[in-house]
Image (cartoon, rainbow, N blue to C red; front, side, top):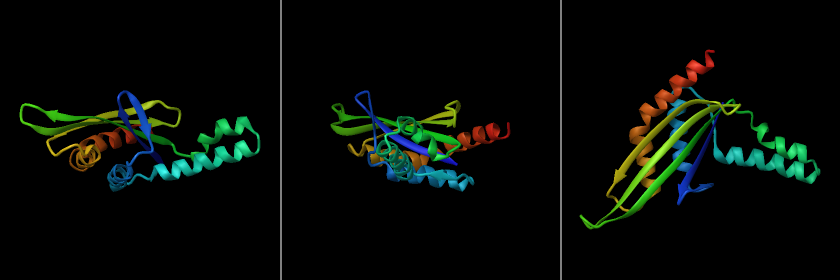
Length: 156
C-alpha cells in the first residue's frame, strides 16, 4: 500500500492540508491504473490523528510517538508543489509556473525513486488548476517511472 502525501511550498514554507484533493485523486487514479493501492490524505490524517488523540488521552508519550507508524503503508509517495505566479510585463498577462517533485520512499524513508514534472501557463493565477492539468497531461511518464522503480524495489 502506498500513502500519497501532497504539500505546497510557498515562500520557502511547506504547507499541508490545502486543496490538493483533486491532485491526490489524479495521482491515485494513475497509480491504480497500474494496479497499485493508495491511501488518501484524509485517511492518513484520520488514522494518525485518532492514534495521537488516544495516546494523549491515555497520557502515553511513547504511544503518541508511535502513532504515525500505525498507518501500515509500505511505501510513501510525497509530492511537493512549488509554484510562482505574477504578471509578465512584456506581454501584459498573468503567468503561472508549477513544478511537482514526486519522491517514492519505502517504510524506512529510503528513496526508491524521484521524479519532477513542470509546466507554465498564461491562464491566470490558478496554481492548483495548472497543477491538476500538469498531473493529468504530464505525469504519466513520471508515474510510470515511479512504478518501474517500485517494481524493481519490491522484487528485491
